Amino acid sequence: MKKGKIKVSDILFVVFIVLLIVPQTRTSIMVMLNQLKVELFSPGLEPEEEQLKLNPFVYQLENLKGEKSYVKVGDGDITFMSYWATWCPPCIAEFPSIDDLYQDYGDKINFVMISNEDPEKIRKFLEKKNFSVPAVVPKMEAPEDLYEKTIPTNYIIDASGKIIIKEKGASDWNSEKVRQILDGLIAAKENSRE
Image: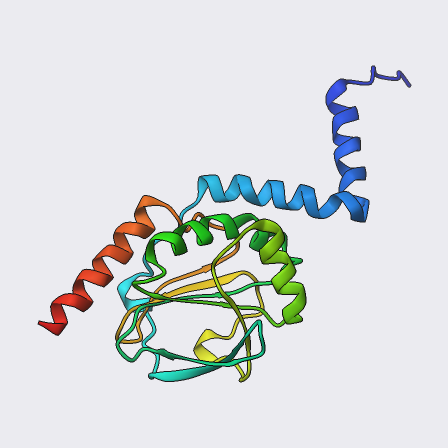
């Protein structure tokens, strides 16, 4: 049996696999791979026939200071809702795009960034990364239509409670496509007031 030459690509492949196995490097590599996905993929509208309409409800939450917070969903306000965690590589990868979106739309729509983690851990994560989008901890079960086992799972819910976008995994939330959708929802809400 003839032995083949070892190629550089074989060595790189083995190094990559070893780095994925080592816990200290795995998260960084997974974040990097998800950042690539964020660069390539932007969420789009759910097909009209698949857009679920939520019954209006009040989400019972707690901010990171331990203060109770209540957010009306489907009762006149547009909501960006995210289920995420500080340890989740796709969440970490997409968070900068959500924070950028928040900078421009935080005063026009509700941003509800929900994590089941310890509030102090969340606060340290946001502070370390210099993110300003507010995060909250749930104080009730997620409504059935919003319950997913996958994180991140993100929603854009229009003022009437219709889930316009539902996206699992990392995405670019600061894309022109998402901004156009939000601008359209905001314009429709303002026109309905007139």
